[in-house]
Image (cartoon, rainbow, N blue to C red; front, side, top):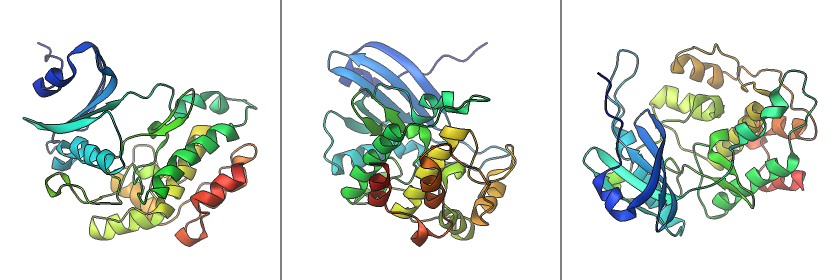
Length: 278
C-alpha cells in the first residue's frame, strides 16, 4: 500500500487558500510546493526533521530551515512573504521565481562535442545577484547552480536558510555545518572536518560561485573524488585541494580559475568578478 502524498500544513492552506498547488520537491527534510493563490504565485517551503539512518545521523535543523530563511528575508527587507511553525517543524512562503536554474540553462554547453561557450551575460547576472546580497552585509553560505534562477528580467539568488549577516530568532537558528560539498571552499571543508562547524564568508561564496559556473558550463566538479564517495571523503578531497585541471570555454576560463584559488585571499572580490564581466 503506497503512502499518501504529503500535504501542505493547515496554517499555510488557511493563509494562501490555493487555487492550484504542485509538489516540486520532497527530500532531506524539505518539501517545496509551487502554489497559485488569489494572493499571487508562491514557493512554499516546509521543513521537518531527518531521522537517523545507518548511513546518516539525524538532522533536526532541517525542521527549522524554512523559518530561519523567513527571518533572513525579513532582515533583508523582503516583501510578500511569511513564515511560521507547523506540527513537525517550520514553513515559509515567498514569491515564486520563474525561469531555469543556471545548470539547466547551460545544458547546451555540456553536450558532447559542443562548441557553445557559456554566456558571460548570464554569468554577470549571477554575480549581480550575489553582489546585492553581499552589499547588504550578508553572505549566502549555500551558493550552488540550483539557487540561481535566471528569469526574463533578472537572476534571483534563492534559498537563504544558511545565510549569515544579522540576528535571527534564537529559536530558529542553528550552526553552519557546511553546504553541498561540490561547492564548498577548502577552508570551510577543513573547519567542518576539524570542529563540525564553519563560518561562511564572502570569499567562500566566491569560491562556490566559481564552482557553480564551472560545473554548469562543463559538467565537471572543481575537485576530484568518486561520485559515490561518502561525504567525509568528499570533504577531505576538498580540504586537501585536489583540484581537477578543468577549463571553462571562452572568456570565463581564467576568471573561474581565479575564483577557485585555494587560498581565500587570492580569490577576486565580487566587485572584481563583476568588473571582469562588464
